[in-house]
Image (cartoon, rainbow, N blue to C red; front, side, top):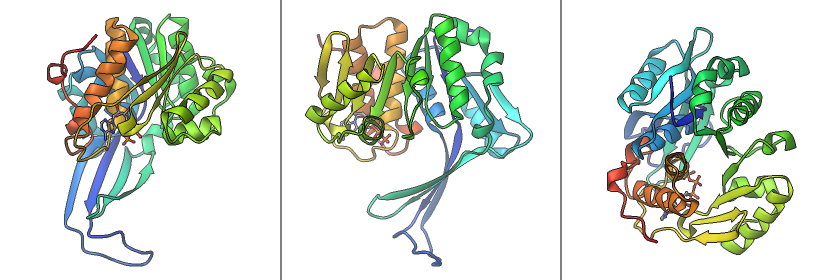
Amino acid sequence: DTAEVVVVGSLNMDLVVRTPRHPVPGETLLGHGFATTPGGKGANQAVAAARLGAATAMVGCLGDDTHGRALRDNLSQQGICHQAVRTSAAGATGVAMIQVDDASQNSIVVIPGSNAELTPDDVDAAEALLASAKLVVCQLEVPLETVCRALERARAHGATTLLNAAPAMALPGELLALVDWLVVNESEAEALSGCPVADPDQAARAIARLQALGCRRVLITLGAQGVVAGLESGLHHAPARPVAAVDTTGAGDTFVGAFAAALARGAEVATALQEGQAAAAIAVTRPGAQAAIPHRHELPPVTP
Ligand code: ATP
């Protein structure tokens, strides 16, 4: 039980409904498509790390139901170690109800289900895995106390910690102090820093605020505007690769997983940023979330 990248986080079944428009309260509409696809930020990031070449394991919690079994099979197919993914008899597997209208606008309801049952004890049970990890990656779709324990145990074993603080919520200072890499998108950066973050200049101000709160290295992803990084060496803006985006779902998860895989391999930060963005740029040119995540051989060569 070893892995270079360990993701402690959520697994959901995405139930995607296609509808001509969003129904108003009380209305029933006829839609024109339905699909179930594996999702959840934790699982998406684990798939990205695995496809980008890292030996990857997940710590998570599934329900004892059809969705849970399908999500576990999916981890197997992706080559992700799931021995630390517990099956709970109590709750149903997490689901995300996603409605997509003909203008590609979506509205989403997430039912955390068994993800809410992932406890600090589950993290402790995965001690050997965490001890083997180079990088431990968390998001905020599982209980905060569990995230805290994962970051704390990762630190104790000398692993690098990465928190993708999504979905946005207030975070205690002692949690931020356990984070080596904080990765947030525009709205999460705004929620955490209290600053508007619409462009790289504003992102730079938000990073200064977050660093004052104790986050040493902060990455703010800005969609087609790329990433602004606040590092020990100062601020860097890495522009995104220009592509024709067709579906940006999962862009952030692809970036995080690919960046983590590169760091775990020992790549320089500049290379990891480039690979993360190259992987995310490919993902936005394809439909779907996990389905869109590229493999390492699809990335363009890294430029100095
Ligand atoms: P999502 O919630 O859609 O998964 P996010 O809001 O978490 O994404 P973004 O900041 O939108 O994350 O995107 C993450 C990274 O993906 C960006 O920093 C960029 O490298 C890449 N990316 C996103 N959108 C585009 C785009 N239109 N063109 C090129 N690269 C993109």
